Image (cartoon, rainbow, N blue to C red; front, side, top):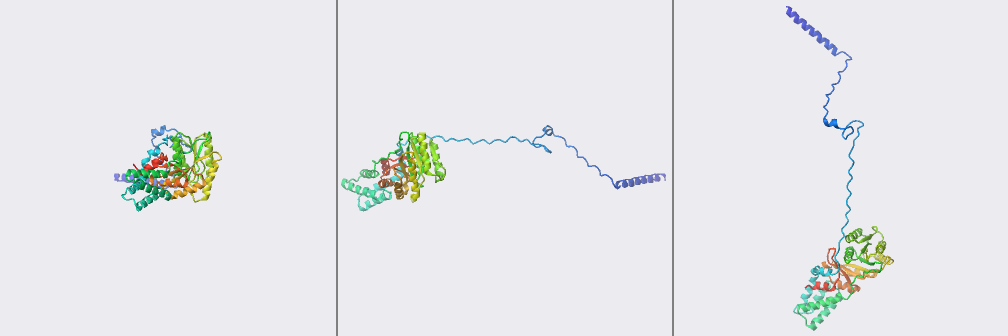
Length: 392
């Protein structure tokens, strides 16, 4: 019995204690339990050694120190290497093979016709047609054919060697080796010679100007170039490139500026620097526009206030044929043309324009363009030209 009473007492005490705990838990105004403080993180060695204010540190008032910016390296200025061009003497002989590749078809065709067993009117008509097709011109063609018919009939020449000799003689006479083909570019005391380069757009005028300057530098002359073609955006840049290659100064003006002013300044620079030759590249005038042609005359008059215009070279494209002849005639009315620079002569079988343009204008072909290379402009040699037509 006593054991049961002890157990009952213990249970009653436990019940009273539990009831008291519940009253304390739900008592009003009880304070909330304080927040549990998170455990401290261990400090890493790298963080202990980092000084205050270093980039990456967080916190109010923290400053970030950045490395100084790296200044980009300035591009090196590349000075174009000055080239030493070969002299102009003998160029056409060296380039003869290029000329022969395009012109020899005319010579072979003529020799084949003349070598037929019977030279009747039909054969001579074919000879005449072949010459006209090669842009020799109607009048020169008739002279050549009439002279050949007479000589063949009188002399009885029929061997290939004899016929070739007769044909060479006639062609050479029409090309006229007696014309003065010298470029008149000698200094006048302290004053330079002046060459004016004119021509229609697309004939290779600016390129010819650059090649001519290169050729003269190769002959030991000091040159100044005038970029008076201010209406074509790329013309002055193109001429600048040609000048830099050989160390020739280039005088240029603003795009769309006054060409006469640029020409005047170029001549003034030439006098100041005591150069040998000033070459002025003019705009590629359309020969059908009178106003532009008048402006070309103005350029020449302005130059003559400072110096004499010694050469006026008309650049013609050999592939244009008789259209080039009309261009030449219009230019001749505006400026006193002294010579022809015939470009693309190596790329056409119509080399007869050499004969027709000289006959119509009384002006010699002085320069021949025989390729795309920088040294492919050559002084025109009549005998080399005719021999290239006829082949070996």
